[in-house]
Image (cartoon, rainbow, N blue to C red; front, side):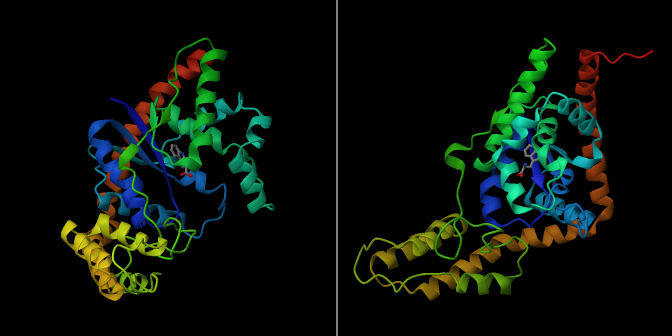
Length: 329
Ligand code: TRP
């Protein structure tokens, strides 16, 4: 059994790409491993120091994850800012994190370019806080995408350095949780590339039916196959990829056959796809709305999560303090 830690960004609603990428794997992982899922609200301050409504966005994203089936009885689901032990470990790790290595990371350099007027120390030490999030639970696996690989490399480095400097074997070096074949990349509806918030092509789990219909009907296609078994263009291939994960095999095979016979009408395919997406997202959307309005439930989830996370975190922190040499008088 692995110990898994995953930080979830507190901005942005979940879209189909998130669902079939990360979330679906979380649902499986939570039954197989010791899992910690948390909303990284401190991290969001590095780019948005005065968020319009921090609490509302945390509440929304938490409701969506719970609505997808993340089970707070099985996994430890918590809010980063509810676990002060993390900030103490962050401070201690900062003493052994060097300016040079922090300024060299790609994400820091990228953010300096993106927000030249707000190159704050939190931005610089972002990987240190992330390392603290992870190693405070002695995690062995972190489910991250390509963009987080360097941060995870830094985590291993800080863990290793701590062990070496103090001559202990306290922290394991966590590696990326490899989803292997199960990782489905959902393309966008604009013809190329992946589905993403910043790409502006996302279908959100909370989109109402009329929005989903509109987005799907606007999806880029081509002028249609002119002969049998014609090779698919990228945009059409993308539609089929989405249909494959959302619709029944019968539906998918039907439209594939129509395409291969050069008899397909993209309008029909899109109509069907939109209805199938609605059928898939509607229950999640309803449930997320219910959860978001159920303050008592959310309070219970978050309190219980914080309690479990703090128990694990404080045990590690106690060891860390002792190793460094803090002693009671
Ligand atoms: N940096 C991660 C992201 O942008 C979020 C994150 C913060 C995280 N702390 C973490 C992810 C710990 C995994 C583990 O997506």
